[in-house]
Image (spheres, one colour):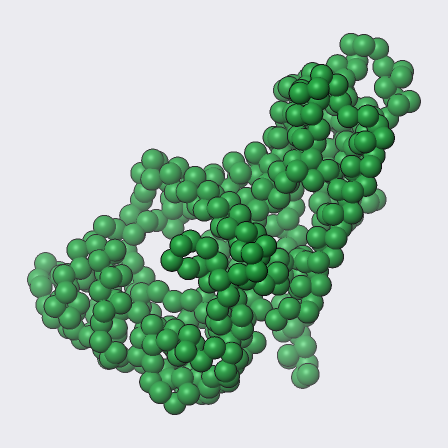
Length: 445
């Protein structure tokens, strides 16, 4: 590799690692703060709040006696409450508990009422969900929401005649009325297989008819990590003008070729900044959502697209923003469960379980795409981590909640022997899942 290429690869690696550490640190800090603050409100004293593991890099003790610290290994964090034997709150420190008075024991995780312990445990995942909802709700105030009527804010470069202009309000396309974006999307699906179509637009108060690109040309607006498109060197803004020598004037034409060809290699003709070149790639098996809402395996090249213009935007109402925040968070939770069910049923490959490398690559890609993409991914990962922690696996928050439910039902906690065995099994399961995800990152295509 030439020095310039080596330098570029090193810069990409630094960006990926840095983005991953920043994203993970934010998510972990919010999760652990949920445990900390609800524990404090419930009367449980936190001895240590740590961002990271291992040797301390920085620390200070606040007026309540809690040590806040940043540790050297930035892949997690913990809150250690008074009386805990370890950072996972997996058991009591018998020596510490023995020297505490009954009143002091009330301020430990093991001597507090059941409701206080359960609330403190549940608060970590809850705060992850709250972070996601707040971020998803706040983003429209910065990037706006589409106006009701289709209006052009900016045009994306494509290699065809384009007489449209920023500020145009699209009234009709090829004679089909387009009063809103939903109709515009429906019209895009029935347009003829031509690179240009006729538009009737409202421009400076006058209705005019102009020629412009088809609504959804094969314009690359998103590239998935570890995809055939990424490995082939495609970039955001590329336009795929032909596949296997046949013109693809619409994005749907591209999809048809990929769908029909399965895993067969495809030669692309790509337009980039006025220049044309060819690239060959091979579609890869990936999960696609079917009409029933489930997932099945299909072959994809890993690109996404949309309209050939940037829509004009407006400020959202508070109600729209909050509703959108809840809906996006719920959608991630729902798709996670549907995906797990599809893997168990064999509809899609277990290669879709990602590990730390794939997550790091995704954060690096999002960071390179811009602040909005990076912040959105942090919110999405926060939902995923909050949900994962609620799984009923010992050592995770969900496992602790199961123990608390047992204590509520039976009137006493599980025995130390049962707890120790359960924690060992839970740790084994978690480590096995992490190893499985890591092997997928290394060996799945």
